[in-house]
Amino acid sequence: MNRLVLFVWWLAGGSAAPAPRVIPPPVRPFYRITFYCSDARCTGWKTPHRTASGRWPQEGRTVAADPRLHPMGSWVTIPGVGRLRVEDTGGAIRGRRLDVYVTHHEDAVRRGVLLREVTWHTEQSASEPQNRRSR
Image (tube, rainbow, N blue to C red):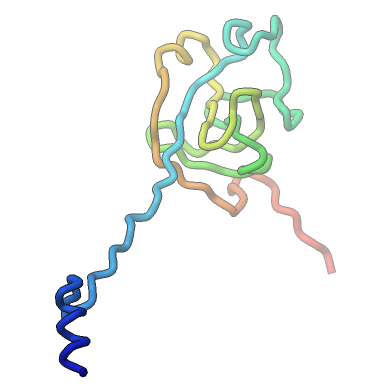
């Protein structure tokens, strides 16, 4: 009886060794990076305006991100761009998309669209004041 079961199992395509387990590669956090300026051609505003966080945008510091994924004040490092702080949002900024602030419209157009793997940081920057409780 035992041989009959083995024979039927063999006919059905069974093998003595278990099938190797396939582990899918990890998903990499690639983001679509675009650039914007305070010009009406980028924002639709006729005059410079404050960001969603209430700060004035600054090149080399300000980036817009989806607030559902990255809260205001989060830090991100974008290879080839630098370390930036989430200070703005936008109607078209959803999911894995970042919009980096630059001063001049020509720079925004010249830099175009990038696809980069970014690194998110949880700690505060050394240049930002740290809140300390007094005891």
